[in-house]
Length: 278
View (spheres, rainbow, N blue to C red):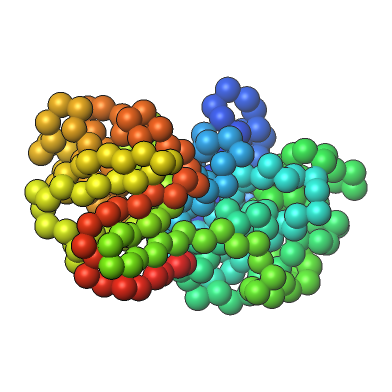
């Protein structure tokens, strides 16, 4: 039976003007010319772990089973942070232990976590302190794609010892508070509050008060952008079923003056009292 070429999905913050993404792809293809390489994006926001984690978390489950995710958003490259391989029931995730993998892998059944420590599997005897995407992570992805066993790379790591980056929200009787996870190029502001919480506490057409960075803003709960008037703040759930704030043909980011990591609260009479994290 002919072996199906492995799928490798790459997510980096290297941008589109430099050669880093291309060099990583070249390293993979040198080891496994049959690898099918897809980019989630090579242009994630620089150094932004929350944004990178959001892009991985909201995209990985749309890929075929056994896809290898190669994630290089690594502002701590060359320091004591660990390079990891995480095998789950359906996928393999490769990247730094800085939290960028954490929300995605916690949504999966984790089988094994390994630190990449076997220097014989690095690109060369002497590697760069600033380009582990080429010298460690791409090599690991390529070798796994041709069937090299995880235990060959190094020792197992306990789940409890991972660097955590939680996407959390909390609810009380008068407000729901979450975190800004991502601002897209339209200026739409995605939060960690899930669809069900909004639907359980507000009706379409109702006004909702947003509290963020010591300011308050009125918005309206709608199904989609087209129901908004000019420059009106709208609240809805996005394509990944998370609560998002936007403006029809405008930028909610500019109006709210927010960025990834900011706390954001929705005020009103909240019927449920619970909290959640992933």
